[in-house]
Image 1 (cartoon, rainbow, N blue to C red):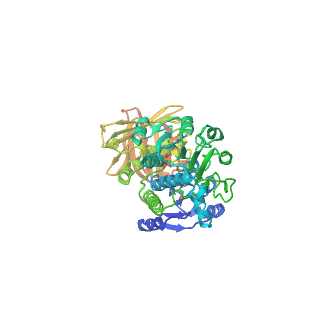
Image 2: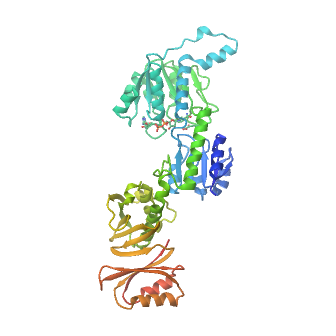
Image 3: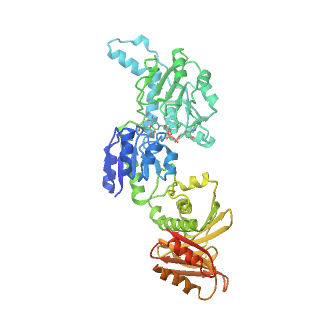
Amino acid sequence: MPKVLIADKMSSAATQVFKNRGVDVDVITGLSKEELIDIIGEYDGLAVRSTTRPDAEIIKAAKNLKVIGRAGIGVDNVDIKAATDQGVVVMNTPFGNAVTTAEHAIAMLFSAARQIPSASTRTQNGEWPKSDFKGVELFNKTLGIIGCGNIGALVAERALGLKMKVIAFDPYLTAERAVKLGAEKVELDALFQRADAITLHTPLVDSTKGIVSRERLGMTKKGIIIVNCARGGLVDEEALKDALDAGHVRAAALDVFAVEPAKEHPLFGTPNFIATPHLGASTLEAQENVAVQVAEQMADYLLTGAVSNALNTPSITAEEAPRLKPFVNLADNLGAMTGQLLHAPIKSVEFTYKGAVTQLNTNPVTAAALAGLLKAAMPDVNMVSAPVLAKERGIEVKESYVDEAERAESLIRLTVTTTERKYVVVGTIYRGEPRIVRLFGVPMDAAFSPNMVYVRNEDKPGFIGRLGAVLGDNKVNIATFSLGRMKKGDEAVCLVSVDEPISESVAQQIKSLDAVKIVDVVSL
Ligand SMILES: NC(=O)C1=CN([C@@H]2O[C@H](COP(=O)(O)OP(=O)(O)OC[C@H]3O[C@@H](n4cnc5c(N)ncnc54)[C@H](O)[C@@H]3O)[C@@H](O)[C@H]2O)C=CC1
Ligand SMILES: O=C(O)CCC(=O)C(=O)O
């Protein structure tokens, strides 16, 4: 039974989902990094919110880890590269808390426009400070949205409902989508120049770090309102403080800070400044949504191989997972066998799919074949890390599709080009089992088995008997023997499945037989 650790405070709905699905679950929150490193090796899955930060060290210690689930959207607390290199799927819940966060941004906008938190505190202190608070209306004002994805779009919709004008900057926002949203797509500087209020809804990445900079704050209208419910680090906090102190910025409301938890901060106590402790996603509904969703997704992956909302591997739906399984298995075997028969670095790989398999999502099949292929040189590679590792090593990967299967329902052909030559291997599924139907150009029909030996020899009478004798003399039992050749008297290949691994000494004895050209030992 797979075992999952919930390491951050999360709705108990997550625990219930894991239990109902048959996944063993521990909830241990508040662990230090060292404590997490000590225990993470026991777990197949790690569920987090934003407090736990699975970095390269933690991931390295997580020898059994298969999936990290983020109950939320931003994954800047997870080292995705380290996870990918180790073959760990990283998934998030992209929609579960979006409405809640958009509502928080609107609440912050109103709070800033009317200074509600400070008015409330002072009223309750018995001051009745009516003449100290003169807010601004949002009606007819221009809201500048930076980042118009899920949350930005929800904020736009709500702002339009308040009869605000909406302008948006997002390099990936198409003109058509902007029209559909009722927003005007503008350049970044224009947004800073035209907006009466700015709200941020981007991830924290290189292109967004410090996007609200001192220079850009300088372009804004006097009286601008700044709201950040996305990530600390998007706003130059020192520049914001100076602009608030100077009265240029009317009000600012931050839910997120460059360093969290922010228990002390130069902005705290600044007039017209509002802070919430990263509460954007904190509603009953959102927390229930993300907890259930992350647990379902992680359980799906651990129990069925279905992948949803992963950031580092292709999606596989629950319906696709069982249909893909035999092809993933075939691809893994084909790749792993071929990888052990190559004698030079790989330059490129082409995967050609024929027949019924072309109707499926072949991305995971390609990733599995690639992982198999690279395994000979990189034993820890898997479907998640293989595409990245291949890219890093400059291996060109291509996929192509042919509708008609030539001789079986579905065929997968691997064409591997090394620095020395080209190899072609073809496999199929027969009665649910993977089979090899062509090996380096030679037709054959062989099953995969854990221990195999591949021999290429001149097609001469008596060779099979001599090969059988070497194996028999060494007490190696033959399970199956598959032969193939292009034509009589030409080169022949045989793939022998044996019950035990073939030792180097046995391989050498086979190599010394007359007519043998190549001997390779394959273990799957
Ligand atoms: N305060 C909180 O509790 C929460 C904060 N968040 C934060 O909100 C962020 C946005 O969430 P979603 O809208 O769901 O993500 P999303 O991925 O749907 O949207 C992000 C948008 O930012 C845009 N973008 C990327 N680089 C940009 C750039 N340089 N300039 C302008 N736009 C850029 C993207 O094109 C995308 O449209 C998350 O990354 C997360 O960090 C999310 C949930 C809760
Ligand atoms: O889990 C939380 O409370 C934070 C949510 C968040 O920041 C996100 O989903 O990106």
